[in-house]
Amino acid sequence: MFIDSGRILGVLGKEPPLMTTREELKVDKARDEWRKLIAQGWRRTKPVWEDY
Image 1 (spheres, rainbow, N blue to C red):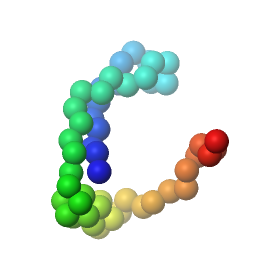
Image 2 (tube, one colour):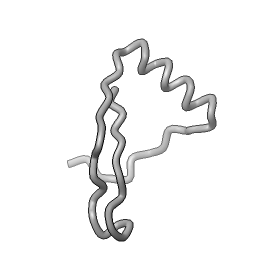
Image 3 (cartoon, rainbow, N blue to C red):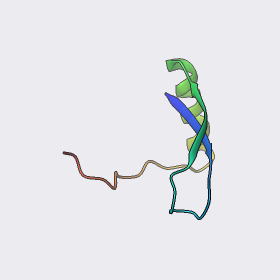
Image 4 (tube, helix red, strand yellow):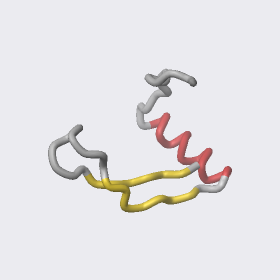
């Protein structure tokens, strides 16, 4: 799993965000992070893009 962080530049939606860091988590740590997010109230959503 990758955790990307970035900054918003300019007006939101006018320019893509600038990625500043990318952290790679191994399987065990990724599972721990997933459990932590779910415990904080995060939920899985359906994709909003089309499969091509």
